[in-house]
Amino acid sequence: MTETQNEIHNRLAGALVRTILEAPIYAGGDFPDALVILESVVFGVTLIGTKLGFPADDILDELVLHVRERLAKERMTLPGVPH
Image (cartoon, rainbow, N blue to C red; front, side, top):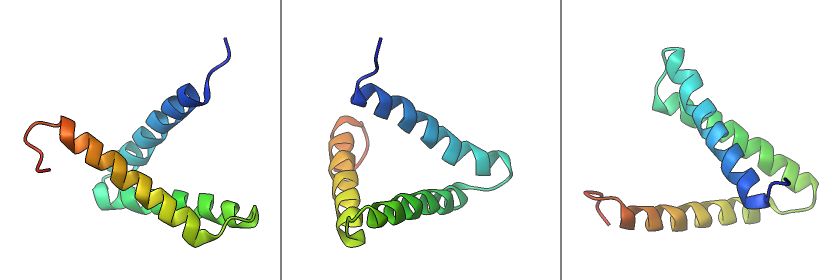
C-alpha cells in the first residue's frame, strides 16, 4: 500500500522529533541543546528552499505562522494549559 503525504508526514515528523530530543538528552544535554539541532534543521531546509527559488523570509514566516496556529489548537485540547 502506498503511503499518503499525511501518513509520510506523521511518520517522519514523529521520528525526527524523537531524534532531535533524545540524542542530546541521552548525551547529557538538555532542551536548549535540542533547540540548537532544530535550528540547524530549519536552516538547512530553508537554505535548500532558497536555492529552489523560495525567499527565505517567506519560508520562515510560513513556518512560524503554521507552528503558532498548531500550538494554539493544541492548547485548546490540553487541560491545565493557559489559553
